Length: 239
Image (cartoon, helix red, strand yellow):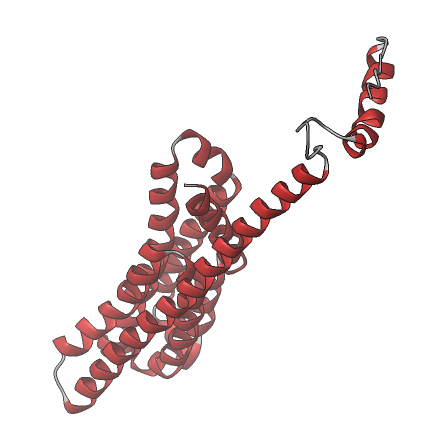
């Protein structure tokens, strides 16, 4: 449980810088080939939707620690769900750019941007097992479905490339998650060993009572507490 909690907090730290990248990328890409001039309402509504999801994710980030304390399972579900909805929204927009004839000119900008965003997002969420499996699916599956729904030789090639990209993303996330989990286990082991060594260094081997080193470290703390609370302090040395 402690490792899962730490992994979720690490995930929050990693994903926070890119919360609003979807909205910014969509608004910039939509300027290509005059798409914004002809379909400004569509662009603005989707920009607002991406921004709204970003705001909800930001609020979840700020309260994640408290949410985990209250209900860890529900907090994890909420946090992952917001990330997946963000990715799904982008995946649907990419599918629109591929399938909608009026968005054909935007495809030139949308596809490279999507490859960059999906790969970066996949690497970032790789440390979380559910997200590492679902994020590539929700971002790539909509465009593959749109391509297959408009059969042509070119679309078939792009659909196969999309499926290959999704499979590659799954392989990459498995490797990255394994490395992260190994590092976390090693850190926990090192912290445990460090606590053991500290305890041994401050305990008499024969009597198993605190030794002089423990006294030297603890006495200043107790002295300050006694002064602050205006209480007497007694020290007994027994040999």
